[in-house]
Length: 409
Image 1 (cartoon, rainbow, N blue to C red):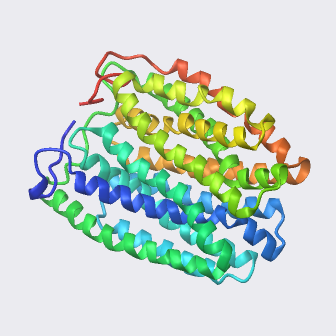
Image 2 (image 1 turned 120 degrees about the horizontal axis):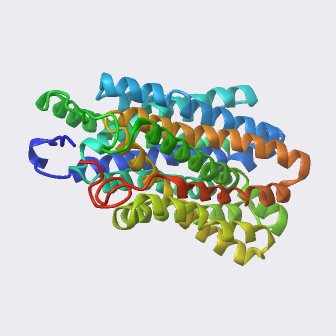
């Protein structure tokens, strides 16, 4: 692996200042995105939306967050644009202001589409920056980057409960301040990125197309399995993120604010599980972390619809902690399979994450209207069982893909 040096003051190893800056901006970006589903009870009451309309809002947000990501990543691999990160965040800023003052369903869709487009630019390019700043510690870098996003996803509903639910839709505008702050930080990251490209002659990756000893057919099979893992993980997570609050309100008659705090507990565990998965992947092998993190959650998810309120929250937290540990391992495993296409691979997997989440939310919204919110949870809890196919991921020599500390070097 070709290692890129960072800023002259940060040469010779991992550029932690850049990693934490990118992680911080990932937190702000995903915090803003997570505010949207946290608003659903408020929007449903204010505008009389059906569950199907709620699902369509999520579908638009997630598809605009996903559909462009592989193309942005592929373009960035060939033509890096250091300041595109800050430019993309400006779309998010405008989208939040528009959402705060949207008078109806159509304008809400336009606003969330702008937020999604900003995220679509951010993720693949930011993943490339994280790899460049890793100093060879790719699992650590991906974990720092990803835990920032999951932390933001956890904080968003909490802030929505504290700020938006009491003060109404217009209070969403305050979150535009977070997008402005992220734009400023990303301008500084863009300066570092530009310096790296200049000093290192745009040496942003390695020149091999696949892992040594793995034929192209094996690589394609492994990528297909990883995609199925993303499907299993994020269809279930879409149900939890979009409808867990409705489920708790419907079954246990708790308040909207209380349901938001319960969602925060799940998402906070999800964030912690992401960081844990990065460390365990280096220590025990990414394949086994992927298998455990999804299949290991199945006993908890299957029990979820049949518990009282206290146990429901405890099991939801354990589920989030276990199932979240897969994503960092999946992305690093995939970039090791195709190490010269970091941006494209990041775009594909982040795009799948958002796109499948949006499709899942729309599907579960339709199902909730047709059969009830409790039935939705009984169906979704079977999804983690698909994790068994991770057993067919290829085993490779120690120190390569499924074991060792350095991955592909």
